[in-house]
Image 1: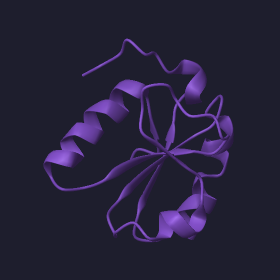
Image 2 (image 1 turned 120 degrees about the vertical axis):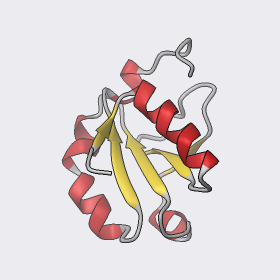
Image 3 (image 1 turned 135 degrees about the vertical axis):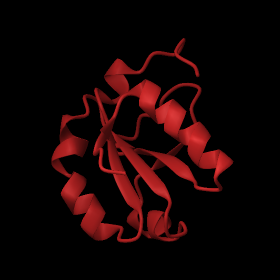
Image 4 (image 1 turned 90 degrees about the horizontal axis):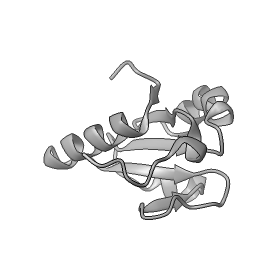
Length: 99
C-alpha cells in the first residue's frame, strides 16, 4: 500500500478487507484516549513489535498531525509492519460512520 494516511472511512474499509485476508489492522492510541466503540491498543513499542509481520498499524492522536509527522519514525521502529496515520485523528472520528 502506498498511502500513508487514511480517513475513518478508509480505515474501516481496509480493516474489513484485511480481516478477510487474514491481516490484522490495529488502531494504535498515542494519546491515551481511546476512541469510543473501537478496539484500540495503547502505544507500547514492545507490544506492537510482537504482532506478526504484515500487520497494519494505524496510529492516531488528537488531530492526526503528530502521528503523520512521526510516521517515518514508526516505520523504522516497526519494520515488517505497515504504518499509517489516521487523518484528523480522534477529533474527526464520527461514531455514526460504519461500512
